[in-house]
Image 1 (cartoon, rainbow, N blue to C red):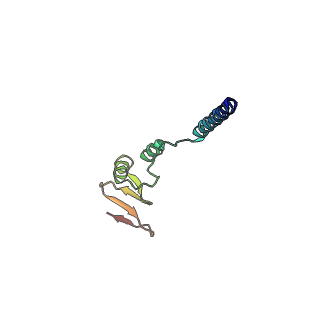
Image 2 (image 1 turned 135 degrees about the vertical axis):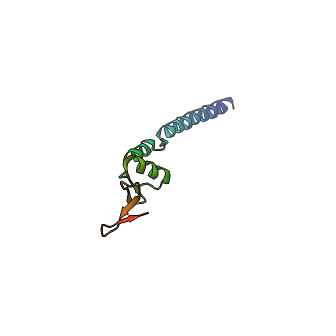
Image 3 (image 1 turned 90 degrees about the vertical axis):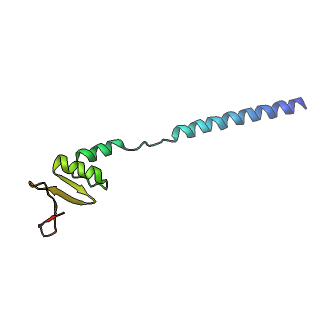
Length: 94
């Protein structure tokens, strides 16, 4: 009877060891991807990247005198008026 309990205990111990080892391996394979902060910096310093962020768009207009917002490039004229170019090439002031 004690031999059966001893064998059962050893089997449970071995199973527990492999189960914990498997969890450690799975935990190592799981990678958490952090938010891509360099992309935000890249957007801040490149007015040719389209953005949906209105504040960033205004900041880039002030800094570079042009910015892409929702796929449309806006410019700042010498009179500090904001415009974009239509398909025909005409300036459309906002």
